[in-house]
Image: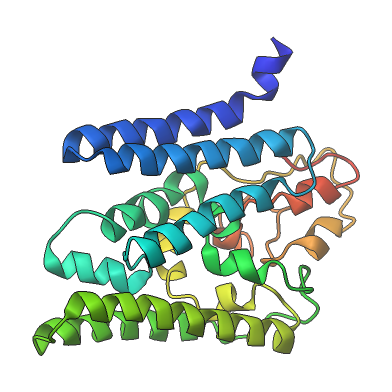
Length: 276
């Protein structure tokens, strides 16, 4: 009974992804989606299972398994643009597959369940940035978050212009947009990490995908909550949070509340087990 209770969460997440895999497989008549979401579900299950087992790098395991799969296999080998430009491309084409399904599940409706868990466990940009030395922000947060909204609009304008001007070889352009876009993301992310002394500076200030993630994340079912009867306000949880979230406040309006990536660093650091 204790085993079931202890490992219920990873099995629930696996069941959710398997349900998505089967539904998409049957409704779209493509076995690719059965493989795709089953693989991601197994990777997520494995990471959470290792976390429950108190393995130090549990989240990183899932991050690498999912991130490399989406970057290398789906992106470079299969030729799918899984960046935000790919979403706009399929949306304007009127096709519900690849990037549009990915965004619907991971970044538009999925956050109602797991908030910005995508950023913590699957993002191939953050996968690299999290290897950098500034895992805990060393400087105060800057007020330049408006840049991500500019990047969001520009990504749409870029793809819309391709359709408006009837660009030749648009699929090839989208592939190279994925390659060049990723290179630009990594360059900007690494530079910002060292300038701001914060691995997640790119996520906070530039990443256009966060514009999709924010609304649903506000209502996220999975949230870090604080037991006020145990909390001594020592502040250790705030110091280790890579996204500057005030996890001692249980309100949905808590500081940077929609940016929690469920890394559980605060939970591991709390000396009184007040966070869960």
